[in-house]
Length: 280
Picture 1 (cartoon, rainbow, N blue to C red):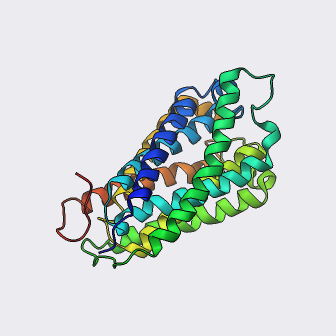
Picture 2: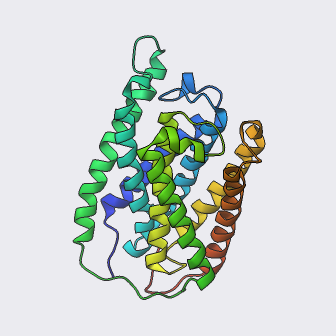
């Protein structure tokens, strides 16, 4: 069976630590992004949204780093590569809004420069490692815990919704922001699009694998994101347009993400000898 190369597991582990810190900045201090983040996120609900995603990514990447079999680790790799590559482009496009100049405190500038360094290095290194990984000999194990049809259908709907909305937000953030249930700037709209594209890629990988055991990292991440987004709404619900169609869709999507995550976790429980292994 094809193993995950050690450098890829190390990179996932490092990335997990970095997104844990980013989540602390945004979910922990959503009202202080001018001081603690790479750029100012004026809407605290947007900051908490990003922070919840970073902490969900931490779960996915940390669990993915423990998966020895590539079939179970790749659902943590492809979404991270997609998001970081897109976020690098978004960051460079809005560089003038980053906290890079002398007007900002030294620790604030350090965060901004650190952000740029991470988003330059990670996608490049991950692309190089993917080339090596895909050349690794071996094959995928057989599907041992097939996903039920209803879960595949729900995952397909998520993939379609996330990818279409991501492309709209990335291509035309001004008009695309009107489809979102709270106010977004062009920068935060495109950053949201990068996140949604990563989610969509994760859903596509899950659809292609069709094995609940292989999608375990993403299942836990899915559930984490849904719970944390609900907490963010409880904290800053006054920033949300609850009566809008997009607001209703947003709440429904969170509920179905939690449902899908729980179902995949429950269905993928237990170890299967010779199929996928985690690092002890």
